[in-house]
Image 1 (tube, rainbow, N blue to C red):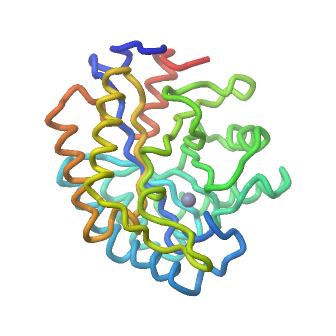
Image 2 (image 1 turned 90 degrees about the horizontal axis):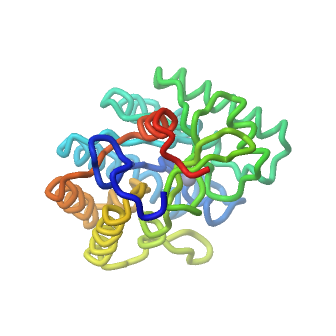
Length: 276
Ligand SMILES: [Zn+2]
């Protein structure tokens, strides 16, 4: 599949999968696994993301007719049921992102199974959508995690940043829709300032240029363009325009297949267009 064009439906040059990690106040656990999620600046940042960033994000998606894939820790759905129901109501895909944003590699196999099964059921109960996509909470996973994910009925993982193309975890039979650090808003807009996580003041225009360059590359090489967004980062008042501008660029460019995780997985599985 290296440098091969025309692998996507209708001759599109790349597949754009727009994803949101809905971590809310669990956001800080990416950086401080033992942190109290209900306290401090990071709590405010996560909560503001849900209150202000998420509505902006949803409106930009609607403006451009884009269906995104939201990876949600089940406890965020318990804390914010109205917001999460609204995401499902607007037709976005609901994927699983753990229960309390656990670092799964630190749990036993039995514990991981319990966490992920419970999270899947909670998300289904609250949203009415049975999640088939899995993204690991930032941290670590093992092959055992992916084996459990497969056994629980998930059809794909979108967790690892180790390829430009969808590929198969051969020994497990699970498709990976890989991510990309350059297409993730957090490295640009957040940093660790001990003790809490703080905003990082990267010029927003620089991020837009990076994401546009990545798009050029994705179209040139025919890869997956897997964008990862956080309401508390890109949804902030001075940054949301980056997303609007990026979508305008993508629509003007054309030849880009916008798809949810499930749509990419289904297409790859049916067409055999994935790396072995
Ligand atoms: Zn996360």
